[in-house]
Image (cartoon, rainbow, N blue to C red; front, side, top):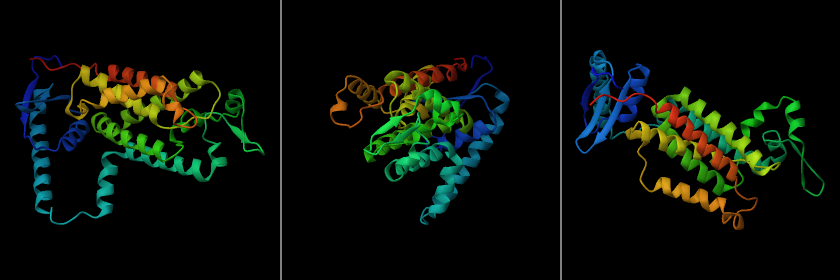
Length: 288
């Protein structure tokens, strides 16, 4: 935002930022949140939005007060689930699909052949025979560009990816809205799958880690270009994730994990996420 008419509002320190951001996005109000030692400040590009924002803040505070009065009553599981689904439908759907993919790989391996990047057949000696990629797509099985990200090959695999998906994905979905977030996930998933195939050649691979690195790259670049409280990760996370990426690239993990690591998906996913972050972070900042 560079409009000299931009105005700044000071927000209560304990305001529910998730609810505020969802409300601002639904009202199509152009804004920028800044958190510093003095508190939380909301910049508005259009001063005429001030009254609507003030009413939104009052509504959020009334809801918070009502929840505080009812705090002695634990909300039913169904109510909590619906609340999460209404705020994070794409993230939760992705988590469910990853869990289903894990179960398919574990208990229905022949069914998993419908969701791998390349089709395959299982031989009598339990070996895998991959069919040429051209044959797979000659049958118009284009869903295979996406579906390998939901296949996971063990408990460590799904726990690692599921936790990071929840940590990164919910932040991005709340900030961008479910539609833009779905586009980011889809683009990163397809790109990381294609990248892994080009990196390693014909092979079986799967997992959400390429998308996880895409979300990491998105958060890092967008928060550099357009800082936002939702994108402020603990300082150790980025070095940890990049360190893990480098360890995998040098082949250290291959000695401990059967089948190796999808390094191509990690690298390509990271750069695709950074590209999305750079594009999304082009919004103008408020004037001083």
